[in-house]
Image (cartoon, rainbow over all chains, first blue to last red; front, side):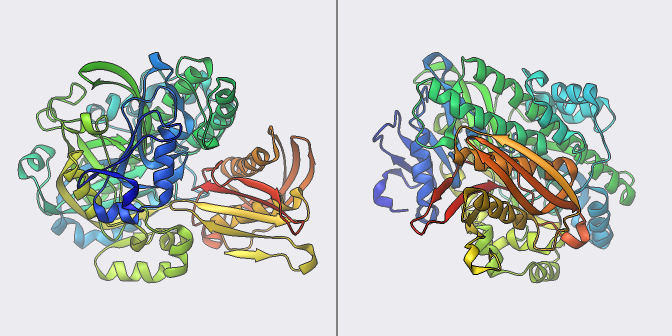
Length: 476
Length: 148
């Protein structure tokens, strides 16, 4: 992007001044290289979000921002229902509550490397991944509604999880305000046999080793030391969330027009929070959040089962579980006033700083773990929320590396087979039903995750705690 | 990835076009119905490049306020059938587009992970880069971004 289009506030804060129908400025957090390489569409989409009714303070984009649909991926925006604020199905996205969880194995790389190959094979066999995979769980109508209301708590009660996990999951594992009755039969049908499946695309299960510690004190609170091994899962609400997103997007195009909201892009389809459609979407979207929380809990349970076959005493203690496609009601200080806002994060992670009331006692002194998925070759990061992020972007940070190249371009440039072989020679085992899928997710198709998290840290959104290198990656 | 139908006079075909995180599908043909069919082939090609045998017939119906939104509905109807039946589709017929309503048929087979090696799961067709229009050369084009 042309840097001249921005007001540079500081080296990592770039402001788009309000123009046209923008009600507030748009702010992109990134270093100069990242912003120069960003697609012009991020500028356009961040500015479009700033035109929506009831938006508070600014429309934000994180350092990993890229061209999305409606909102940029990496977009954050808060809306006030008392000022005509809206909720947007496009602003949450199709994969509602897609997120990341990281579990501590209590093992070191030296323990895992000798069994790396059979461990990779077992995880690939026992965790359903990819198109056409079938979960072992089929839900009837009663179970479906219980799952949509109960989230990870439901999974634990059904024996597919561990009660100790719940305080380490956002919303204590159960999103309040879910309304299963607002989830369509088609959405439920899509989920009937999908619980405990990983999905495909950029979703994965990885076994990772701590490669570098940036903040020893926080790392100790998180239970992370050099060479420790963790298991990380990235996935969301599967077909149910996709179907809810699809249906409400269609409906909100009509209601936005009926409410007199001029949409610069149909994908920004939205409804006033204080409207029948807005409330119905919130009830369905929260049910989809519970679906994602339950799904990650079940996948965590499966991972535990596989690890226990190799290491009988290994329990996989949950470090944290974050979602990065959501709309949540949160209280934030704006111009000295506490206000209740509907914060949309589309490809952005909630990042509460130290002392936040929602954090469990063990984490409260240091802040929330912010889990950043990288690409399969380059590794991932664990950050910690900073108090300064509240004023910067309603306590939000980046969510991943962000794509630099389209799947299309990646496929032209790389062979999946060669990537698998090259990574194997570096000690990283990839298991996937599709070599083409691997090529599309090639490490080189992603931005430099190190630069993204450094920019997030510099901007005061979240601070680096540890870098993880992959040992095993299961891709759908 | 692109493909043109065998007979050049049919002026039908499809291609993928790039998007940062997802995939654009575009179909073209002599009529909107043909362009929609071609866009459906492009949708299947997101998942697999392998042959999909037309063993099972599934009928779909959908409706939308205009032709562009109808394309999204058509693709989403296919995505829904893929998801609930765990099938892939390799042949498509849009039998009728009347006003805002579409009747179509899909032929396919259950996913065979080994043979189809599915690369990616489409989550939903989007309104981004959505365009259904008659080109100056008289051919119809139908395109949008699919979230994967």
